[in-house]
Image (cartoon, rainbow, N blue to C red; front, side, top):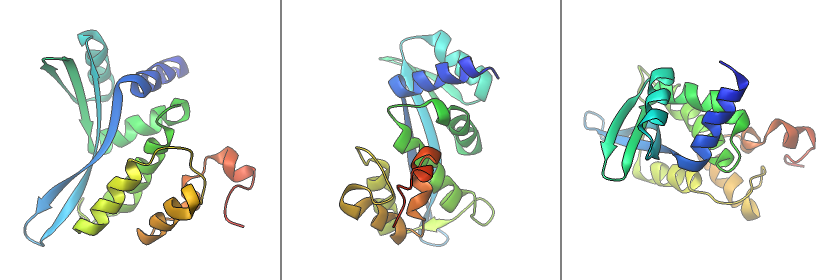
Length: 168
């Protein structure tokens, strides 16, 4: 896949895309399983069809245009492909990939259970606005990552890590 195409898809994601972590009730154990989901909404059928043909996923027509959805491993693969080029949603992309690695990919046959409190923490971190370093805003972001068992320095970009922005 050409670098220019990856950058193009990242630009589409910055403008029209969203990353989300959904949960599904898993009644046998009384917990939830997490699912990574990406969506793009645009008025152009051609754009969403291009994404679906390239990465997989589903295209739906809505009153506002067309929506492209992709979930699970395919969503992770798309995020990894565009992550170096994403500008405005870089924090959400990095955090979604961390959640995938720590909650979805490590689960016993595809399932890892989370309770309401853990899910609320994940969602509040996913919605975090503003710059990220290992401390986050007043250390709050990093502390909440630690509560989830995620190393806060995993949120640093390679350039931040090289510049010593991690914990002292």
